[in-house]
Length: 129
Image 1 (tube, rainbow, N blue to C red):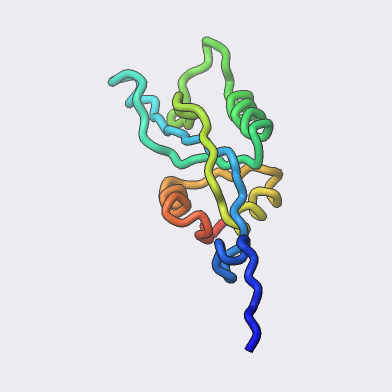
Image 2: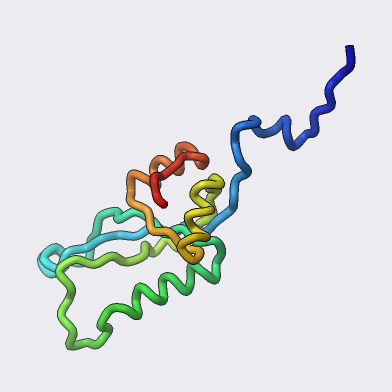
């Protein structure tokens, strides 16, 4: 009987799980004009955006702001999303999520329930294609 050799890397991860990828995550809030006008600036969670690196994160936030009319005379949109003030954080995602991010140019916007599932299990298939 011979002993099988097991590397530390394969022993640390079950055979059926792919490696995790370290990505940048930014939470977003959603606000409605009526709520902001009547009650001041307040919002509710609106999911998160995932980015393969900090450069993609900065470019994504910049694109989101650029597509809005920033002039002082522009009316507040009925509903809009904005990044939280907490800033970005780094999280792990599984291979399937990372591949979707690459397929979509390095960024992926996910809903609040998908973010919850991802936090519970980084290997979760979020259903995004």
